[in-house]
Image 1 (cartoon, rainbow, N blue to C red):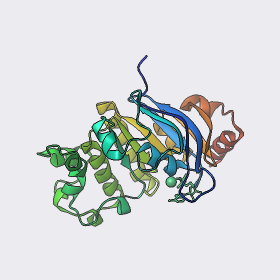
Image 2 (spheres, rainbow, N blue to C red):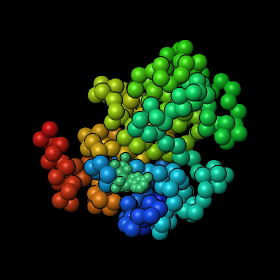
Image 3 (cartoon, rainbow, N blue to C red):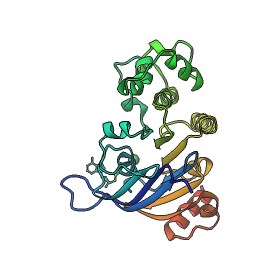
Image 4 (cartoon, rainbow, N blue to C red):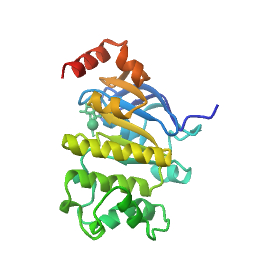
Length: 249
Ligand SMILES: Nc1ncnc2c1ncn2[C@@H]1O[C@H](COP(=O)(O)OP(=O)(O)O)[C@@H](O)[C@H]1O
Ligand SMILES: [Mg+2]
């Protein structure tokens, strides 16, 4: 059997000067083309875990594998050279998009970082994610939250990822815009065989988009299953609580 695209083995993460781990003993696997949902309340460690997966925070203990290769101690630059194809989309495109850059330059940034050709790519991606025809010469603040998230998705795609980390990508958006962005993500996944790690505090959204779900509480994954059975028959008390809340709302 092929190695999973991304695998974590017993990873703990601790912030400098802290006495406790923010994320503790997390093991998970993400297969090519699949979506792992990570769900849990605010402050449980989801973004900390995402930053570690992206190579922005080191693991204190444990190991991270990409296609079976140990990348635990690699810097972002070393990861690029080892073919690790992970991009991130954050919750708040307002603060994650550089306000001084044109949309064209925002989208092309990952290609420039990697020293790759950019000809025609911003045009193609901008159209694919549904931005208006004149978007490329404008700046992030001229766009709505949903359109800025389309820009963030186009930028992620420019890096030719096999996996995109989506950290609460729709949490700041109105419900109808949220649905449009989720549908775009599902289409792109099918077109490009993308894997997603989709982080959300919203169980309903995770249920819509994910194949598997990991439920986090206080820095620990308490339950990890395929999505359908986790929602039908949650085993951990905390998951049961979340599911009951979902049905009640
Ligand atoms: N830069 C940081 N330095 C120190 N502690 C942090 C930092 N960022 C987050 N934390 C702490 O780590 C824990 C997990 O936070 P976070 O990963 O942001 O949770 P979530 O994304 O699930 O809301 C929280 O207790 C938070 O206060
Ligand atoms: Mg977070």
